Image (cartoon, rainbow, N blue to C red; front, side, top):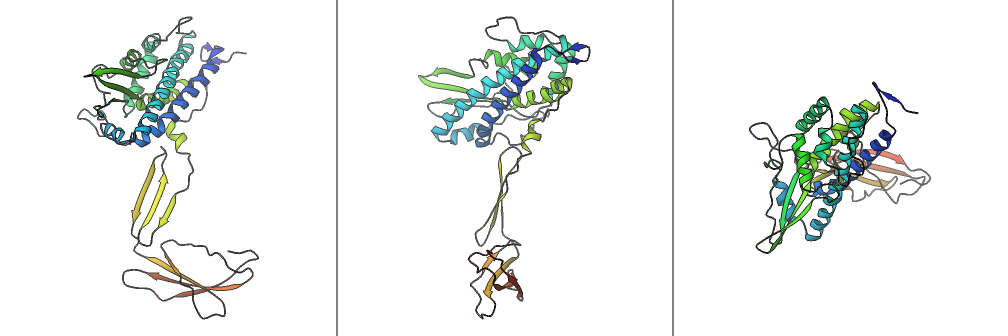
Amino acid sequence: MERKVGPLQLHPQVPFLYEMVISFMESARVTLDPVLQDIDGYRELELEKDGRPAAPDHVVHKFAELPNGMAVHHIGACLSATTNLGLAYVHALRLLSFLTRNEDSLPVNAAKPHLARLFDALPTTTRDALCKVYEEVGAHDIEIELSVGGFAGEAREDSKSYGRDFRSALAYWQSRGMLQDSHLSFSGKNRASVVRVFIPLRSVLVLDRILAQQIAPTLGLEYRTMDQEMSSRTEDPQLMWDGEMISVSLPDKLGRILEARWNPTVTSVIRIRASGTETWGPGFETPFNQCSFVDLKPDSEYEVQVTHKNDVGESEPVITSITTGPSAE
């Protein structure tokens, strides 16, 4: 049975197309994530004088520093991601056509869908909304040029061939073979091989917002944007203490690792002994407010001594008695 969406009936292909878009989109995002992490591609960008994000040229240098095996692996990941993302865009634009015009904008038996033409088939109001989404995303698609003699690349998102609006971006994708062909082009310069690799961070984020703002609400569905989905990661922080410095390592919502180090101003010195004995164990120093003891006897009483230590010296000790359980540590 067909559901109604506004004045239109929901075409039988719509649920299937929606699932395809989500699947291709997620495949592209997951594939690109380790590439972007290794080249610092998630870094907040500086702005040009007109307020647009500056081209992320630092990623080229990061890519150049990667070991050859890792660089080749990331090239393969980008090929897979661009193919999946290109297909996600095809079906997203088809889906928008079904939702706004109740017909498929893709010609029957189309050998190679044309993104810009699918965009042109949408109503003016929808095209304007998509262009607005594109302008709102403050990130870059990244194009890197590699050669045998080194990395002679640059981020080319602002080049004239790319364009500054959503339709010209789609046309650029088409001209660079970003659908079934993926985006990997070879050319020769002075007999040296040159490879151009495309890392579509901005295009992933644009499609993410199109799903959240244009498609899911029309279908009456809830859609979690990438930031919401990745912020649900629950990995625990890793804490280390080397006797002088505390190190903390914590994954953030984009999967990057946030690291911090500092020298604590106050630490605690912990010593333990069995009740009834006079000699304290050697003890250990820690900046943390809890600790665990191992190899204690079950059903036994122990005394724990705690002092606080800083540059001036140690405080007076505080002694507490504890009793272990049947299998206590």
